[in-house]
Each structure stands twice: as C-alpha cells, then as structure tokens.
Image (cartoon, rainbow, N blue to C red; front, side):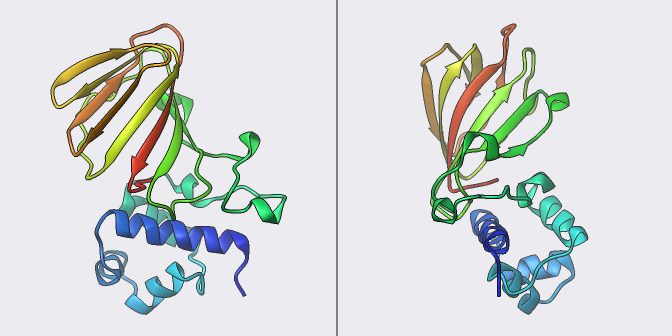
Length: 187
C-alpha cells in the first residue's frame, strides 16, 4: 500500500513526463529501465531509489529536492493546502534564485511558485518553454525580457507570456519576490 509521500512523488513524476511530452517508453529508454517499472513508479506501486531520483531529476532538468515532499500534518489538507512553513524549496541562495512550490503537487494543469531573486541575480541565457506563464511582483524591482523586449516591473505589477523566449534580472538592491504561475507544470 502506498503512503501519501509515494502518491505525491508518483503524481509529480507523471506530471513532469507529460509536461515534457515524453512517453513511458522514451523515459524508460533514457533511464535504462523497463516501461513497466516507469509505469509502476508513476502509479506509486514502485518506489525509486535515490539514484533513480537523481536520474529523473537530471532527465527532467529539475532539482532533486523537488522529489522530497514535506510532511502534511493534517491529512484533509494533503493535495489541497500548503502551509507557509512546509513548502518544497527549490534552489539555493548561492544561485541567486530560491523558489518555493506553492502548489500542493504538480498534478494539476498549472503550478504556482514563489520566486525570490537576489539583488543582482540574472538569467543570462534566454529560456524557451512550451508553457503559458504569468507573474505578480510582490516586492522589489524585477526586469523580464520577453521576446527581445525588456520590461521593468515594480511592486504590484504583473506579466504574462506564452511560448516566447525570456530571461530575467533583479537590478535592485533588495530581493525581488515574484509569484509565478506556469501551465503546464514544469517543475
């Protein structure tokens, strides 16, 4: 019988595979595993080892910390509520970007992330994802380049784009906090 953590892990792996448009067979081939094993992992019937989780993280381009959920003390809140002190944190202060998953899991049609950009942090190379994304600047100053055009945002400003290359930077002296929504989930 699978526990709640296994259900979240299974759901997240399935959502990441689907968001990247990969089949079970493609994942199995890339991981050197059988299609049956990948299917069992996605259904929560098999629990991947730590080395398997590292391989999944590398394959999906996500930090391995994404796969470690935090305990939800009230069962009725699982998959519904994420308490402030129990968010899954992604990234480190050394990278200039720390993100917290605000969504309970990656199983829905979108994910919500709280992104904290350190002063001077920047994404130097444009990124292009097959997603629709929107953000709300909760605090600080934030600049985002969308399809070659830079936009300077202040507290309370928001943005949205779909399928366009983007990059960002924090030109300010304080952290910039952005609430970011991405559909489909990519973390």
